[in-house]
Image (tube, rainbow, N blue to C red):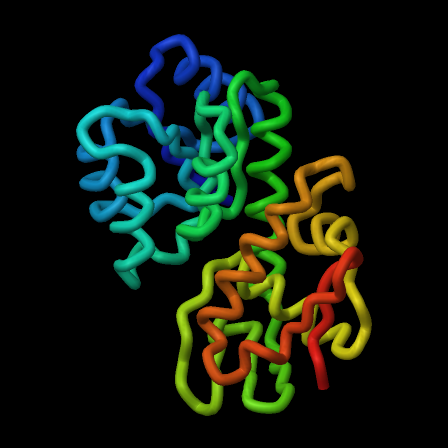
Length: 227
């Protein structure tokens, strides 16, 4: 079986070496790029199974690179894990708003990065194996094709948005706490910042358009998909 390919975009040599060593040890085929512009060329030439991206890289910064990737259907669904030394909440939120599947601030444990990457890939592979459809009102999900439609019109969802909507549809009418969603959608422990959920729900509502108000906020608790 071919190894899953991971592209690491990191301009700090020591950190790039640590990531490459630990990911290769975990069984991945790892490629390194030091600049955002050269990374874009590599991504378009041969899309990897997952992208690990430092926001602060030269040539083309991580946020702009993410915007370009998410606008291109050929690269929009590449799972993306962001790394950054920035501590400001706004950078984390912008990264998630753009469609990152995970966000890990520096300094971090290489083992944690490996575990997070495996969780993202495991969720993606699990979705690809499914073949059923979910329908509620004007929303339809084709799990096998990873296709979402609202009132007959296809909408583009990231892997995380798709997974979040799937969970809400499957549990329609029941309130889902932020901590439960973090566990079931992201695979996180409950001590991870729950505002990650709020950011993705906000993005999902925008994309659902006429069906957006189906996702109700239960103040102080979480979210519920109305029937």
